[in-house]
Image (cartoon, rainbow, N blue to C red; front, side, top):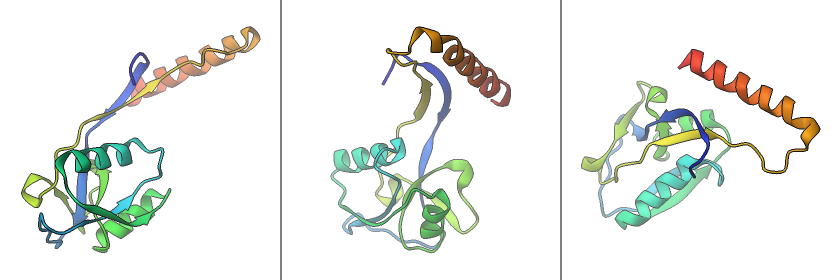
Length: 136
């Protein structure tokens, strides 16, 4: 989705337990993020395009639960590179997994904001842009 104000970019990676062994023939066990998560969409789209079989073994809205599923060897998932722990490793093409696209968060203003609310909406958007600009 384009047209918004870019806030930040991430480069998600496939993550698995440190000692996981995958074969291209096996169905990939996945720990999935919620349905509306862009990482879930990126991963499933990449797997479908590559023709890689997969099955969900775990779904959670908790990133910590997903990380625990990965670190314990229950499943593979998509995480930000910075979230890979010593119990995990980054997976990729040598493991039979397709490359993942980057992800960008954007700020979009609603089309139907009442005029009397617009100053508050604009101020909040400016604050968000300023805060993220200072931390990035």
